Image (tube, rainbow, N blue to C red):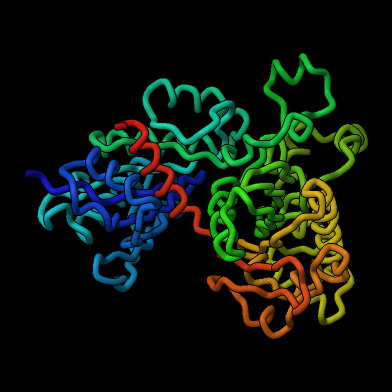
Length: 437
């Protein structure tokens, strides 16, 4: 009898990068193959997954040949990381290098078979799902549907498709699952996702608020609900995913009812190099007064604005240090960022009817930014948040979850490290199970 497949491979492709992570499913001992393994996973509730390998390929397609892969692996504990410099002209070449590394590091089912034969599922992060409502098995029809909406995420979806194509060739016997950053926000009501533009124009071009960071929000919702001691379907949250790309989400009964990013990830909060919300009339104004083309304005708003445009850096730690030293531009940049966050915070409190279980901070700034967390949570006693416990707030840094609210707060303030790779692995297993039921 063949040993059961037991590993879930998660892939996250960027324009010139490829992140990967492998999870060992600890419940895969019973059964004889992918179908039996997936069925057993569903019977036991949420599968128990242990990370056994992870890495990152960078500078894929670099004409200078400077591509590099950093990776660690080991079924009995993490082995010292490896650095491999090797030309990677495309994502297919990068993935072949990843597969070779994993085969040599992890082996396969029963300790001897190739790594490819031990893969139960391959989960792919895809930023934009268009009209697809849930994570899906990737067949030719689903793949074509993703290509049709690539114009809605031109920087993100094409690399994902290249990676999907390469992975399906390299792992032809494993089911492949697409997990979307837009899925979590499919529960928003029409008045939240509709723009006040001509209705026929919106229908023709699929113009609506989609929202992003949804894979992260799905994980954070489940973790925050656990930390407040409630089922997700009874939990109200405001989640701040604050990093180089920042967004917020209002979660009512475990479901997204509004989010700050919109048709694209540009809408909403101030970000590392994105401006977030602005008067849309600024766009034609700049095109007229500065002679800028559409692509130039797009580059200005997405790559030259935000913290970079206001303070000359996308590194918020550096901006905080300069602000504390008296730099007025950095002080203003932080104040603009905090005001924008608090603006959405107030709106989402209204959406939730003031019934908030927890305010959640995550991602790079959210987990590390004790100073910004304190600024955001100032004077919120009216909302049930009596400020932050200074010692707890200062002690909570990236990778560490905890409560940081001051005594007497009705709502909790949580710092929760996100784990998008784990969420993708869990969703991939769920989709595989649904396919074999």
